[in-house]
Amino acid sequence: MSSQLVYEETQVSPDVILLPGKLPARVIWPVAGGKGGTGKSTLTANLGVGLSLLGYKVILVDGDLGGADLHLFFDQIAPPRSLCTFLNHEVDSLQDVLLPTASENLRLICGGNEMIGTANLPFAAKERLLRHILALDADYVLIDLGAGTSFNTLDLFTLADDGIIVCTPEPHARVDAYGFLKNSVYRRLRRHFVRREDVRLCIERFAHDAGRRSGRIRELLEQITQVNADCGEVAAALMATYRPKLVLNRVRHKRHVEEADRFLALVREYLSVEMDYIGYVRSDLKIVEACERRRPLLVDDPKAPAARDLCNLIVNGLGISDRLGRLAPGDYRRIAELAKAESRFW
Image 1 (cartoon, one colour):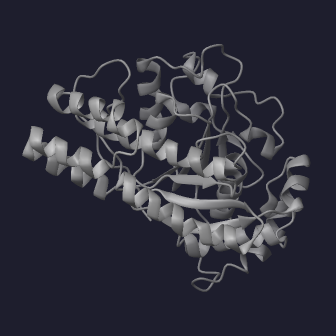
Image 2 (cartoon, one colour):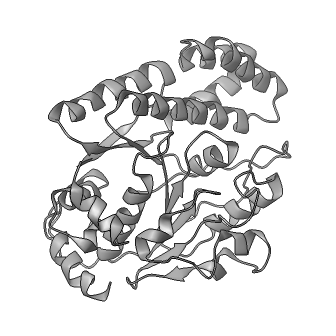
C-alpha cells in the first residue's frame, strides 16, 4: 500500500508548497476530517498501535498545529519536545523531537501548542516541516491533521494521493468532509499549475463561480483543456491518481454504513475523485474509557467491539499483512492477542 507523493520543481508564491526530490519508500497517510470531533486523533493513535503490532516502524505526527492532543493518548501530559522545538530551530532535524512510546516500534512527534502563530506557518517554515516529514525513518508515517481547510492542513493532506478522511454519520460531518475534499482538489490543481498563470486563473475563476455552486470538476478539466490541451491531460492524470480513503467513525446503525456508497457516488460525480471505503468503527463507550485512561483502545481493551473494527480496518480495509508472519492473511481477530501481550508494557 504505497503513497504516491506530489512534487513540483518551480519557484512559487508564498502560499504554495513545492517539494523536489525522489519518492520515499515509506508510506505516508495524513488523517483528516474537515471538522473537529470526528475522531481523527483516536483513529491515528490506534492505527499507529495496530501497525506497530504487525511489526512495522511507525511514526505519528501531530499536525494539528495550535490544537495538538495526540500525545494525550500516550500519557504524555507535558512532552519535553514538540514541533515547536523544531520550528523554533532549537534542533536541526525533525528526528530530534521524536518521543518514545510504550511500543518499541512506535514513536511520536507531538504538536506545537505553546508557540503563538504555529497554526499559520509562513512558507519557509512549512516547506522545512514537509521536507523533514518526508525524510522520517519509518515504514509508516501517520499525520493527525487539524480541522478546517487552511493551506497548512491541505498541503499536509496532499502529501499523499491516498490520505484518510474520517467522517461520522451526522449529515453536517458529511458536508464538512465533502467540503474538505473539494478544497483539496482545488489546492492540488492550483499548486501543480502555479507557473501556468492562464491555467491557474482558469482554476480560480471556476472555484469562485461554478465551483461555489454545483459545478463539477470534470467541467473544470474541460476548461483547462480548452486553455491548453497538454495541461488538460496533466490535470486529468492528477485527478486519476487521487484516491483518498474513507473511514466511518462512531457508527450506530447499519444504515450509516450503507450511506457511505451515496457519499462516494457524490464525490465521484461532482469532484471526479474515486474514494476507497476501507471500513467503519462503531460507537463504543470503551473508546471513551480508553481516552480517559490516556491509552489507545487497542491496548486498553483489545477485545472491545470497536477494537475489532479497528483491527479489521487495518488488516482488510488497508490490506496490511503481518510483517512477522504470525497472522494468516485477512485474520484480523488475532491482532487482539498481540495487543493483549503488548498491553503489559503500557
